[in-house]
Length: 445
Ligand SMILES: Cc1cc2nc3c(=O)[nH]c(=O)nc-3n(C[C@H](O)[C@H](O)[C@H](O)COP(=O)(O)OP(=O)(O)OC[C@H]3O[C@@H](n4cnc5c(N)ncnc54)[C@H](O)[C@@H]3O)c2cc1C
Image (tube, rainbow, N blue to C red; front, top):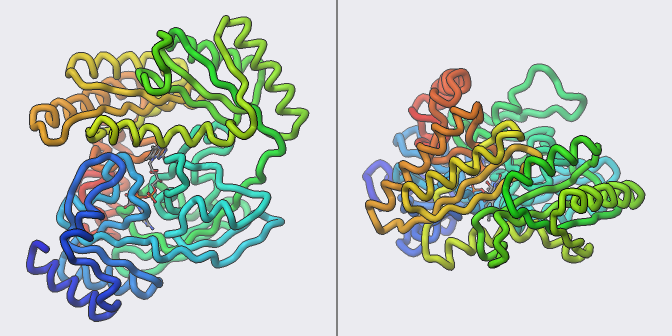
């Protein structure tokens, strides 16, 4: 453990919560020093609250000693979101995982924020949470809301925000707020400010969600794109044919998925709904692929169930190559998706860094994954430069960064969004005058 104020804060928290809810051993602290990006920052300690009152107390103590807190779900963030970059105390939310209310008919569920997606998806038999960002179901409800997480199925279902009707949050002032809109969306609430705030405005303790119905029928395709320009042509053809796509995701520069066939990208698409609708859309899709001479393969329902799980291979990729990842997510106008990917490729080759791109042409969403050796100082610097190159190019294309996965340690600067930075900073300053809540993420102090 590091500094004196942190030691005092941890002792005081342990005396209230009990020793077993506070972890200070090196091994435990090391286990919480990573997220899925592979970056490492060791926390001063880890606290594991089990109820709302614990969190209010932890925040009170953190303010008293000026010690930063970092809320953490499952640590599947790709951008360092739950990493204690300022030697902070990590607040592990996973013990707060109860189901508080559920209603199969309306699809409403109220759950604690530490509940994992794979458990949330067992709560109602005919409903599901369609946002499974890591493909493994490990992410927690709190983490999904904090990042406003997106997934390939966001084409049909939107991002996490579309399913969130309310949250209970403990603000950095220690005040608990229940922000809910169970009826039609109200013009006046602060839900949209809290969703996507990346743990910088408070700790979510529970959420009220409305889960959509599971589709009756799903049909999925795997296609190969010889040229990434095909992505833009496919999305235009899909829009013209008025096909309702449920999910779309393409992988570029990803040998492990593409193989050695020489295609520039491999991609997965899904249509879903009633059997009649899915059949009609599916047959329209096949005509488009044939007309455009795009090699395609229909995937059976069982395989369709697992196609989006393939995203976990992004994580495995870095582990296999024993490297860390620096990921940046951007959103551009759909017709500029190819230009954004080309800029990323150029950046990777100029700075001699392997880069894999995951993109969704229907949303204009592109994730650049730079792989680097965190022990090689020069490579770390080149990676930092790569991220800023991509940001510059994205701004030049009129795009924005942070969609889905969040900005994390990269942070949003006023070059990217002056209005957001100025308003969000004022709110942050007012709610968190000591900047104890996840400092160093999302925006600069
Ligand atoms: C292979 C792979 C692919 C991925 N693809 C995507 C993707 O396509 N889209 C996407 O959105 N994400 C993606 N992610 C990232 C990640 O899965 C999501 O961001 C997820 O929402 C994080 O959930 P978590 O519970 O693990 O949160 P953590 O990683 O623990 O934390 C994430 C952020 O949420 C904050 N936070 C966590 N819990 C709370 C709480 N209770 N209250 C307040 N703040 C909290 C943390 O401080 C941190 O800033 C991917 C991850 C992997 C490994």
